[in-house]
Each structure stands twice: as structure tokens, then as C-alpha cells.
Length: 289
Image (cartoon, rainbow, N blue to C red; front, top):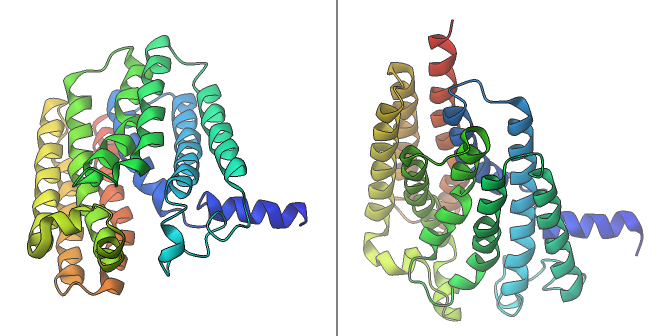
């Protein structure tokens, strides 16, 4: 196998060809970066957290495939993944994940000790999430913590402290993750039942659509409170209204529980996160002019 072919397999293993996961991880991190920096974050911190997000998401994908290596071969959508199909070995997968996580740690070395300290639970959350599907009835909540841990790290990096608003933003991200990953789980519901895997779509049952919309509503309410805590104004509120419109659009996609439309809603969550970030960034920008 040529080097180019091997790199192509690694790209597939880490899902770099499907950037939606990076974006869902990046948006809440940028919420934290911008609010902690009061609209003017240090650009070195922006760069570090953007690259770190991509590295940690890639590492998480590799660990996920390692954790699910005996399950993915029974699922039509995942049976041809590099590890499951035998094109990449288990040892390669573990070493690749470890190398990516180590590279992410090297990125934060220019930052302060509190950020270094918070990186350890961040890595632990990312590495352990794939295994929680075996015993947690709503593993998506754990995912929300793992995907949102860049928020307290961003505050630590810029302020040397993690104020209450950072934890409120993290909580908001937990409910957002439950919403969008339940949409994703609705796609795999039948496979999860067959394989005995836990998911929020199974836990919520016939109330899955209502639960998704409820989680969007809680997310927006928490974000509104966070905005009040840091003095964000009407432009931020307008961003939340746009995000609410995105959530309502998702209702039209998932209400009939079509697998194709549920997956479309999941992918579309990029715009929910982007709307919130745009509201934050523009509110600070207009205020400082």
C-alpha cells in the first residue's frame, strides 16, 4: 500500500473528510473564546483552540472506531470503515489517536497551568465517551460535556480562571448535544436496538421529537441567561432568534422520523452553532466601534 493510500485511510478513520463533527465541537469552543476575550480574544488562543479542536475530534473518531470495532461490522453504514474492514489495524488506530491527542497537548504548552490541568479531564472525556454507549441510557449528555470542555479551557487560557458563565455555557452545550445527537441516533435506531446499544432516541421512545425540541429550547434559554450574565445585547438576542428558527426548521425534518431527514437535521446543526457565534461576535464588534 502506498503512502497516499495509507493517508487516505487515516483521513477516513479520523473523519477529516466529514468536517461536521469538527464544526459541532468548534462552535461552542469559539463561544467560550469570544466571551472570555470580550470580543477581542488573543489570536494565538484562537489558533490554538481551532487546531486543537480538529486534532481532538480526529483522535475521538479513531477511539470511537476502536471501541465499536466489533459492532460496526454489523451495521451497513459503518461496516466498510478502515478499522472494521481490516484495512487499518487496531494498533495503528490506538497509536494514531494517541499521537493526535499528544499533538493537541503540545499546542497548549504556551498557555497557563490551569489550561494544562483542564486538558486532562478533556482528554479523558473524549477517550471514554465511545464506551459510554454500553451503559449510559443517554450517552449524548456525556458527549455534550466532552464536546463542550473547550469552553472552560478557553476561559482558563484567557482569564486564568473559570467563571460561572463558562459552566453555564457548558451546560447549554450538553442540551444542544442531546438534541443534535438524538437526531443522529434516530437514524441508527433499528441498528441500536438489534445490537443492544444505548441511545437517547431509544430512551425517549415515542417522545423523541418532543425531547429534541425541548432540548433546543433549554439550550436557547441557558444561552440567553449566559448572555445576560456578560452583558450581551440585542444583536446576540437576534442570533439566538436565528438559532431558534434553525431549530424549528429541524422540527419539520424530524417530525416524521425519516432516516434521511433526521440525518439532514443533524448535519444542519452547524448553522445553529454558527448563528449563536455570529450573535456573540457581532454584538461585541458593534459595541466596541
